[in-house]
Image (cartoon, rainbow, N blue to C red; front, side):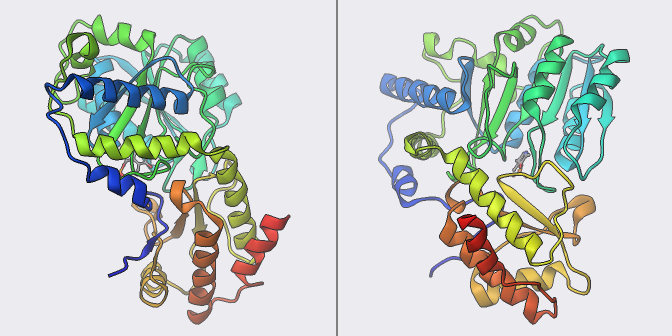
Length: 379
Ligand SMILES: *Cc1c(COP(=O)(O)O)cnc(C)c1O
């Protein structure tokens, strides 16, 4: 059976080469020194992808694990944490910080816009007594990319440790971890890198390591304790048995990304054409600015429901798109253009199917979405 084309903002399509790597024979990753080298080399490739010299680790668990591990390892009870919040993931980050005892303050911004640098700057003038700040690179449910380059440099000026959830941006948006002074940056396997869900990876700066290793209160977790990973290579010891097959898959996915000539440009160009076609067709984007290059969110036209669009796209066209959750439930639909899904043919098929679906549900469009897409690409 041929499965649907999954045009969701993660998980994304997994290429045959990656799937073949998942099926490779395994060794015992706890004791085979070759595997320690392999893990280390895979982390080096991720360093290249993230533009960092900071240590990178791959953890056995989906993206949320990275987020929780950063909070568990950095935060001590009573620590002041600034949660930069312009969406569902941004806001939720504060909840993870609270689990580990943080006293959380929110910098709450417009949920339809990217974080405004100047507004944050003004806020920080009188409130900068924070140990850690949490940020989201791409707010996946709303399709908004935040200017983490400028935001992190600003927070750094106030000596605040930054933790950036870049799960849905890494590989699809520009990322200069070191140049932008980012302390912890985390990503997941199943978004723009197009490996199966199950792994998180993160980079940890020297400043973040110092906080992690010099805390007073013990870290209230084992699985989320990054300190357990210090010197894993020198000691030839992993805190737990590594998911070797998943790492084989991720490795190939990262190599595919590194071998491509400018995947970031591909995302920018196609995302732009997707947005242009939808707007020219008379649909409304949810974001007012900060348009993401990895996911596009549109308001559901009046008179139709998310469920009808989803069902018809899947039943008649074998294409899976998604809505969102929380306050955006039943209000928007989202098209993912991440990693292996960010290709002209797949987006053409998706827009053609969406065009037919919306028309059959009674929505009047100002042009054919697929044709508008092609003319937007041609410019
Ligand atoms: C996908 C994603 C995660 C991981 O969350 P899941 O809902 O478990 O997939 C974390 N942060 C962001 C911004 C994401 O897009």
